[in-house]
Image (tube, rainbow, N blue to C red):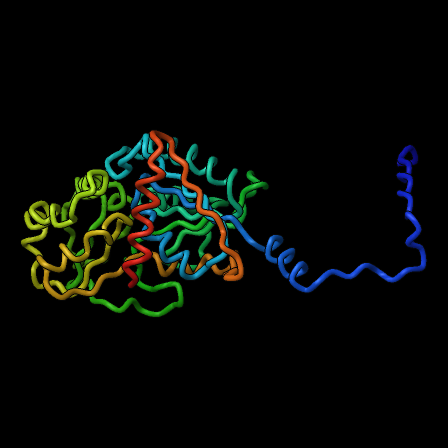
Length: 302
């Protein structure tokens, strides 16, 4: 270490003996905001993740957003596990490179990675109903990852029993998600393999979600009488009204709240700053559609 030399000091330009320079309070405040603002990365196959982003914007205002829609490979729900794992690895690498914390806003990808992580250094058992990776032994540069899961576990992230009875509950999820989770005894399951794709097409054509009613009626007519509906795909909250028209008055549950609770470990709200939202795509650029859809979701409240 003896060959290392101390770098020469820069000229002081006549400030010796003077007090330190002070800055106005508003400049210091702006500097602190810049230092603490995070970029939240969101990964999904399409517009479904916007339902999660809407809630993130409410809870964590002032943080930048990088939303990566893997629309070239959509839909994820009907892909085999091997192909989906490769696609997700590439997509998540993109999001990790452009953000400080990653949210997987896709139940199919999250449940697959959660299943593959069991018994490995990737697994995080600190919370149920949300998939978290804080660090990996063989990937020291990894940034935190939070994955959305359908709330079907016996206990939620606070350790309390979930507020529904399985035999009075209907689970709606993609085929991929259903393969990767343990479904409680007695819980009912509806087959909705085309629903996410139909939702995407409806939005693409600026259509009314009521167009989904015939498909939903066919798939859900045998479940009238259930009291609770678990939405195991982030696209599905976009057609809550149509589901309610068929099933009647039901309570909806999804994994978004657990994601928000987990995200607060890594991000805080910065309401003093209006942060950018950037959309990126693996296929064609659909920024205009996504911006319009997000504005509609935010303005509709709820």
